[in-house]
Image (tube, rainbow, N blue to C red):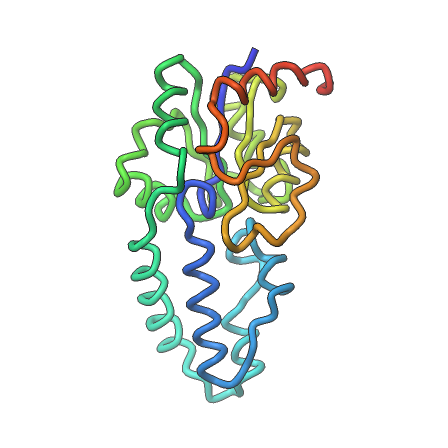
Length: 225
């Protein structure tokens, strides 16, 4: 029996991935450089301290690069773009239905808690979540299973009793390593990446009713140890 749903945040609830990528593309292009898609793809789902993009850009652009000004301008551009993004399709319905039928709802993110919870509150979604585990809450981060294990421990649910929702290869790897049935829902940035290691893939959460997914996951519980 499925007792909990655990969501990623970036690119799954809100498409923050496209704004981040677009803002960096604009910076690189303005200085005559190209941001390699393969490099960006490897960063999706990982914590921000995994790779220093600013140091990488400075190495390409030269030692006179004003990183303070770059951070300020790029951050403002990202905020502008993110605030224009709607909640992704199906998310609100899934959260509302899960709450109605008494499922625990958790969130496992590699981003900072203040950032994630701030957006959830702005979008009137924070109240749906029983627990949120973010960058500062675990010692290891996706693709390690630690964020998911922390959520499971906090809500008192076994891995085989939960479904994870992810948008990136690193996120799917984390969920599967934690023993969860994982639904992959790619966003415009991750739709070109392989998510074949997920248990099931949807174009959006609006594509399949929650009850159907619950039945799908319950039917495969025998796969889990």
